[in-house]
Length: 251
Image (cartoon, rainbow, N blue to C red; front, side, top):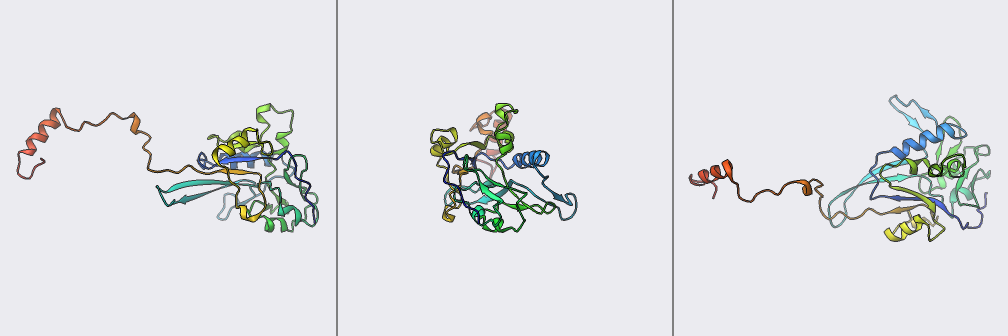
């Protein structure tokens, strides 16, 4: 079985704002595109336009309608990918050492050359963040776009995961969560970032920012509308007075 390295000081990961994510799937498309075009082996699609399409994705979005005890129901879009856990069970269960955690930055990766596709790591992952590619026969997962992060041939602004670079709502943030003074760590502290399923004891590096409560429906057009007159005037005022004189008319 594979051993985990000592906890690293640098913990690269994602902070995902569930209050901001609009569920547009731009991150899913960007992830699929970048990894299929630049990854060691393409992310397979089987019968993509048929009756039962199937494909390998490293990032997915699930949408849920949540009804809090107080306030109105909310639609929450929940992006899901590998959380690069500190105590990653997918690593320790791997019989070949193909699944491993980097000591220098905490990123969890798969050596596809050593992977035998047994699926033990996928069974061990409590988040369902690993998928077996049906064409390649190996396990694939989010790499945090390690080939972008350390690529000095890319402009500085592009040295982040493709999902972060693409998100139009700014719901995805990338950085060193091992540094308490980093932008992502400050964001987690300010917004009360949470671990996903902390009872599993995996210590995920990725953090989620909870959606803000919605106390009442928000009418985004209300501030732009002219106030409605409480008493009608003009023709409507005359009509209102005329009808009020009729039996059973408005008073």
